[in-house]
Amino acid sequence: MKICIRMDDITPDMDWAKFMRFKALCDLYQVKPLIGVVPSNLDENLHIDAPQNAPVSDFWGYVRELQKKGWCVAQHGVTHVYTTKKMGCFPLNRLSEFAGTGYERQYAALRQGKAVLAEHGIRTDIFMAPAHSFDRATIRALKELGFSRMTDGFGACPYMRWGMTFYPISFRQGSVLKNEKKKGCATFVVHTNTMSDKDFARYERLFSDYRDRLISFSDLLEMKPKRRGVLGNAKEYAMAVTKFVLVAIKSNGG
Image (cartoon, rainbow, N blue to C red; front, side):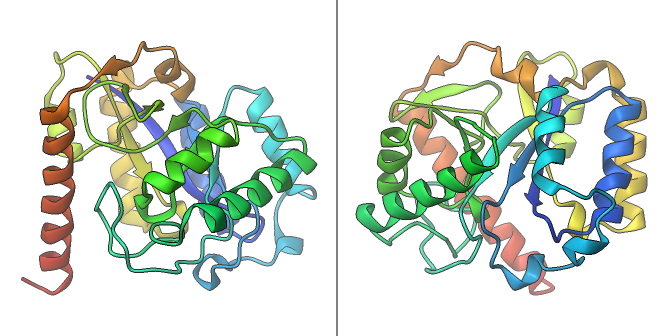
């Protein structure tokens, strides 16, 4: 099973030292990930480094350069501020920027986010939902705005649902690593802002030990999506609920 990487929470005020440290690892192993860029970051938890202290003078120009070099870019929400506690269609978290807010509000926000990226010369048809949370109104608004791909869901290969192509994330990294001979690909989700030295060491080992299975996200986009039935969708929903419960138990020290 192939492995690709997505990096969440890319903003002008992210933890640049950690981002650059992980980027160096990607460059070393010639892996070009998907990066989720927040158009108008208002999430206090993502305000880490002052933009003027960043190692690049032009954040948006830097994102464009990464895109030219083969890195894929997704629109990662709009403000990254959670407004509801709805779990949405992929119930990994009980909080959302979009789910439960209605079509009109979502369409207006998503259009604004897309316009911000376009103003800076960044165009993409890939969407990355903050907290993995979205509902059918989000899908409808995204399609109206020209988005055709989502980085979310569970599975071994891209699949079609609601007229969108979904590129699954890993349910459990260990299971993916064990399935060496299984066909398909899973995406490992990376939040560099919160990575510890232990996390970096783990990814350094992973990249070294599984280098033959690492692919760039653009390679995943070339895979032909499959159509999935009702049972597959129900299984995905059940897996998401299960992971939500397991994470909650672990967080509470259970």
